[in-house]
Length: 124
Image: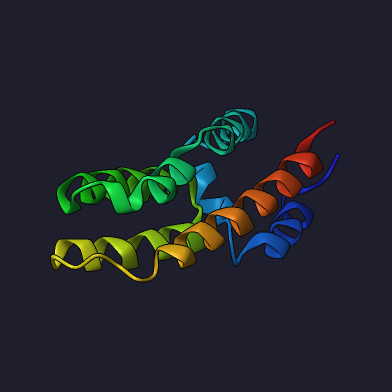
């Protein structure tokens, strides 16, 4: 069995993308539940839908979708994706179509890869 110190050191590999300790705190330390939430998130097309329909929606709809994304990834501790969503939201709330939507898509892709690797490490 891995002790808590070793487990925290394993999490350092993911710190650019995932705040595992923060995410776990929201599930009261339940790793199984946390992993379930992460699996659910990466299987949802939330970011893909947002970026694919970006040019076709008004700023108010985009703002709502980005805000929802930001809240979800904050609760999961997905830090890099949160920061990218926050930047897009700032632009949209200021009434501008953000030119950093590609950064959001890239952060989503990188985060999904990190989450996938993290989940594989957690598998028995």
